[in-house]
Length: 193
Image (cartoon, rainbow, N blue to C red; front, side, top):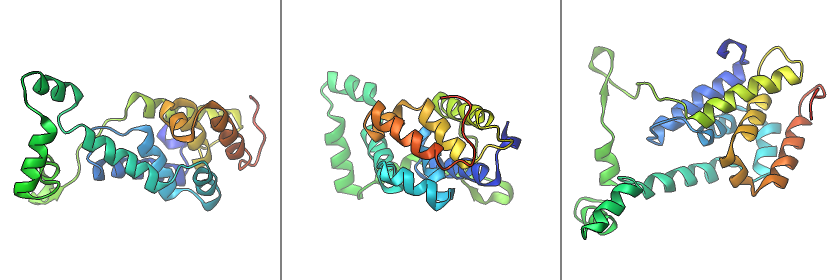
């Protein structure tokens, strides 16, 4: 399916993987696909997304906050709390002694690539929601009778698949308005609603 992606849409997906690595995510999520789009798409699409509140700054902030909230995971924090250990207090103590974000730096193992160079490479899987977004972007292209998947199709696929995107834009009604505005950027009308 990836061969059907236009150069721009392919770049957005590759950028999404880079964003996931940069943000130390264990997988590529729908938010990373949106970040890839925001970095690679044309000004028309990024403007429409920004008007709906989908900006790079907002998405990065959300992903960074989620990463801070799960240093060991919610279940781990609850388990430690049950035996009298406050994970937040431990984190504050370690950061007071060794500096801010020391735990994040220590948690990121460096991988060795060819020639002994440190590489950020390594497979990062796509989440089920991200995979569904890519599949639905193909369906959007087919519905619009396009031979290639453009960044606009990718945006529509993400919005169709992603409960996260619905949360980001504020619910179903704003999501429908955003989809309508993105569809208006396409050169042909769609065969389906």
